[in-house]
Length: 70
Figure 1 (cartoon, rainbow, N blue to C red):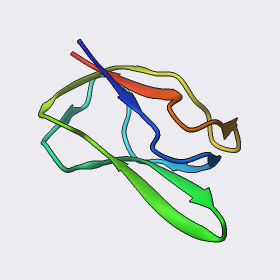
Figure 2 (figure 1 turned 120 degrees about the horizontal axis):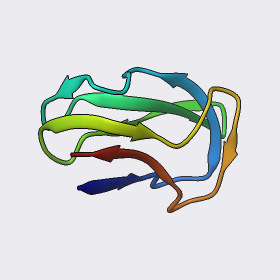
Figure 3 (figure 1 turned 90 degrees about the vertical axis):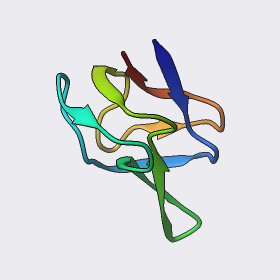
Figure 4 (figure 1 turned 45 degrees about the vertical axis):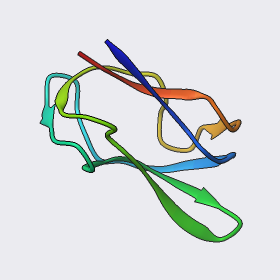
């Protein structure tokens, strides 16, 4: 299991994946809006999305766990 964390604080603008979806390293998982910029949170490694811990519109802090990969 790998917890994917946000590198910035902001709002969840778009969720690009679903639970059960396979992803490759570098795939965009979540798009965060911060300081009027769209910042992708990318998969650090390939795997399967086992959990999404945020919803579109949520405000998050830097370091928040957004997705768990199995």
